[in-house]
Each structure stands twice: as C-alpha cells, then as structure tokens.
Amino acid sequence: MKEKEIIEGYELAKKVYAEEGVDVDKAMEKLDQIPLSLHCWQADDVKGFLFNEALSGGIQVNGNYPGVARNVKEVRQDLEEVLSLLPGHFKVNLHAIYADTPEKVDLDQLEPKHFASWVDWAKKEKVGLDFNPTCFSHSKAANATLSNQDEGVRQFWIEHCKRCNKIAAYFGESLGEKAMTNIWIPDGMKDQPIDRMGPRKRLLDSLDQIIAEPEANCEYNLDSVESKLFGIGLESYTVGSNEFYLGYAATRHISLTMDMGHFHPTEVVSDKISAVLLYVPHLLLHVSRPVRWDSDHVVIFDDELVEVARNLIRTGAIDRTSIALDYFDGSINRIAAYVIGVRATQLALLKAYLEPTEKLKEIELKRDYSDRLYLQEHYKEMPYAAVYDYYCWKHGKKTGKELLDQIHDYEAKVLAKRN
Image (cartoon, rainbow, N blue to C red; front, side, top):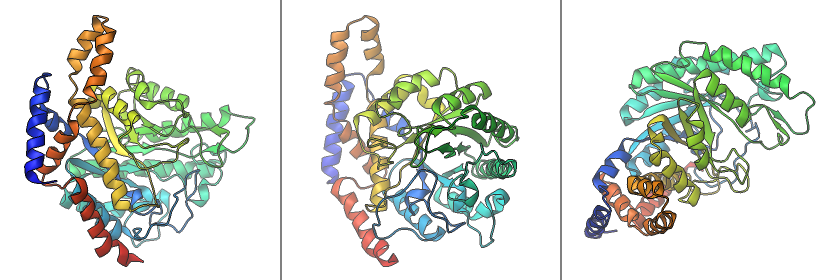
C-alpha cells in the first residue's frame, strides 16, 4: 500500500472516529504500551536444544515446511526478522530447553549463566524475556511430573521449577522488565483413573514448595499456573484442570494462565476474563486458536479474539493481564506464522481501544438494548483496519502485500538455504 493511500485512509478514519468521541491517536499510544510475548518455539517446532528427545506431553507439531530453525543462532535470527517486520512493544517467551550452553546439563541443574547470551541478545534487541519450565519431552516426564508418585522424580521437577524462577528473576532484574514464569505440566491419564485426588494433592504440595522460593513472586518475576482440558494420550484425566488451578491461584494470590485452546469447544475465554479477575491478582493470556480441540493453530482475526480484546479493554483488565502468543505450525512459513498471529492480536486490541466503550455502557445502563445491539453492529463497520495500517506505517513497517514480499524475500535468502 502506498504512503499516500495509508495517510488518506487514516485521516478519513480519524474523522469518522472523532464523530463517535474516539481519539485514534490515543488508541495507538495505548496499543504501544502493551507488550506481546513472542514464543520462541514457533521457530523450531518445539524441539529446543538441550536434548534430542521426541516432542511429548500430549502435544505435537504438524508439517515439515522448509527452513525450521536448527540451533539457538537460527531461532534468534528468525525472531530478529519477525521483530523487524512488526510495530509495537515485544518480549520473547523462552522454554527451559532453549538454554544456550555447550555443557551437558539436565533440567534440575539449569542456572542463569546458561541463559546469559539470551539476556545479552534481548538487550541488543530491546525486548523483555519471559520463561517456562519444560515439563515434557524428557525421560522423567513419562509418568507425570509435579504430581508423580515417585518422590525422587517429583523432587526433580520441583527443583527444575525452582531453578526456572531464579532464571526468570535474573531476566527481570537484568532487563528492567518483569518476567512471567508460566508453569504447565502434561500430567494425566489416557483412561479413567481410580484415584483423582492423590495426584492433585501431590501437585498442590509441589507448587507450594515452588512458590515458597523468594524468586517465585517478586519485583522481577511473577509465577503463573496454566490448566488444560486434555492432551493426546491424556484424554480422560488432567491433574492440573481449570478448577484446580483457579482455586490454587485464588488461594495463593498468584497469576492464572488461560490458554484460548485449553477448554471445551463450546467454552470461550472471553467470558471468563471478568470472572477470574475477581479472584486472582493477575491473568496471563495465551493467545492461541483451537480447531475442534487444543490444536494450536496460528492465531487469526476471528470473533473470539475480538471478544477477548474487548473484554480486556472494556473491563480495564488489560492493566492486570500479560499477553503471550502460543501456537506452533510447521506446515507453513514460520515467519509468516509469527507475523499473522501478532498482526491479528494487535488489530483486535486496537479495534477494542477504538470502541466508544463509555457510550455503550451508558446505553446499557439505560436498558436500551435495541440501541446497544444496533451500535455494536454499526461499530463492526468502522475503519479500524485503516488505523492499523497507519500504525504500522508510523513505525516504519510495511503492511499488506509489501509485508508478504519481505517474508518471501527472507525465505529465499535464509530459510531455503537451511535444508
């Protein structure tokens, strides 16, 4: 799209929104303040670099598109390309298996020094870092992790999570931006268990030991716990269910993670936001897209993403929410996957900021539901895309087909040569 067309579209949109009492410049400023956490595992299909283990834990990546990152250097190279294509404020979300070290080190031995090069890289790229214990794709994860009945194995995973908190606190202190440490485990059973309470008691005790450490919830790091409905091979029972983690986060006053794909197909995260934030201090939102189940498809600008953004903005919940992308698709260009997901998320947030929320609330309080419905439909027609194009242009980034051309150019010059 040409510069003249972008500016003309923006000026027209600005005028239209001003008639509704909306300041588009202020909306773009607010969007700039929301850090989106880019997940490193889209670049290499969740392989990591500590071990040579097959992906496990009820998750899988489909596809074999050329150009997958094969080492830390290539993951960073791809992330740098993504950052160069997109406007906004970003963090990078690391899993423990993405340690950059020549040492042969197990998960319960990880230290901040194994991630020092990531901190140096983050400073150079002016991004923050988030973190995740890797409680899958490991021999000791075969029969449960933090809920394991073998005390030795359980303590291995407790120690791993404790060390992850130390690493995350190191990130936050070094970069001046608080890290989020997200704890997700795949523990569960393929068929009906007899004892559903025992594993949950062990998980609760494990988590209590982990968050008792000073680095778990401090000025540099915040722990969050993530539920899941089920995983492949774990269809009948998930130890860390939604109810378990909601109760845990509420009683321990820590963050709750909600992944948009981790619920029943008829459930929506957008409706849960205003409910859970009455009880927990913070929400970590994993932006994903389920297709019939937790398939982690690339995020697109669909109705549920728009509703999630609306509920974050309308309720003021955005101030108590961290947002991270979480999907993995090996069937398409992985740079395109990043760009599509980020653009969709930013566009949904901008659209929500451009809504005359206070006007709609006043109409609702008057019980004028016909006007409310009419205006909700009317605002779907507003030129929010023209504002987003201008937002990209303002930050010196391409949009439309020109952005796709840059992705193709990187594929030809870099990705195609990896195979």
